[in-house]
Length: 263
Image 1 (cartoon, rainbow, N blue to C red):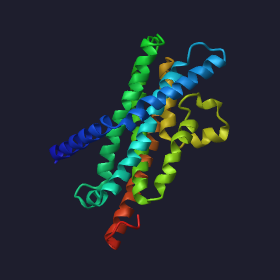
Image 2 (cartoon, rainbow, N blue to C red):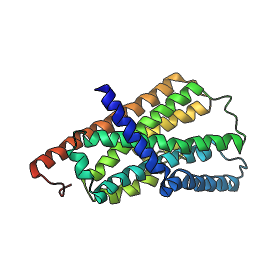
Image 3 (cartoon, one colour):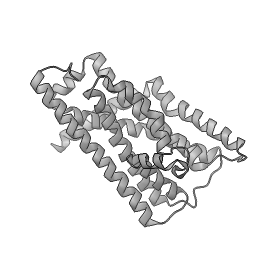
Image 4 (cartoon, helix red, strand yellow):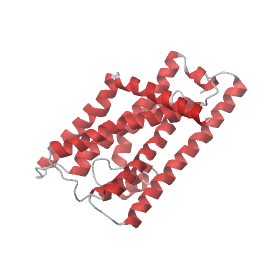
């Protein structure tokens, strides 16, 4: 049973990597768009009198933005491609549930997005000569894992949301920048109005980024870090739970109606 599940994961991840590798749109999402946002951030930094771009919010923030943008559109367009190619019905009817397929796909998309974050770290070291000597390395690694879990849970939610309703894809596309703004990808969350900070608390990415920010600045406040990690993982679990609940309702409707036009 375990061996069969591992083969499924390996095969699906391999296919997803191949799709992303030979897709120019994916290259633009993971590299070109983050580079543009990073360049804009550097220009604004210089205009404000800071000749050296901020490491966390200008350089690393652009890499996180690349991960988020790539995840939103890759997970969204995977479902659209299934509809276009007529494979969505086959996936729903297969022994492997749609939720499992989307969970593996989204995991592959999140892992693919890591190249954007890795590129940001490389640029920080080679181009801007930043040193990571004073960072809390262990906390950085844990924060990255929490960030990946948060991205994955949101990606699964959005991917399945486009299955539940054909019209939802039109709205999901507009979540890219608002979520990036609310969660403070390229600036400290504390500068936002209080109501926006309150809205951001429902996103696990916000807490992972807050922990990552603290770890990169060398913080060893374990209580605060643990609080951010715990909230990030808890919210990720809640998003996954809502996804499973709605997924079950979709399958029940398909069993009753025998068709997929209603979703």
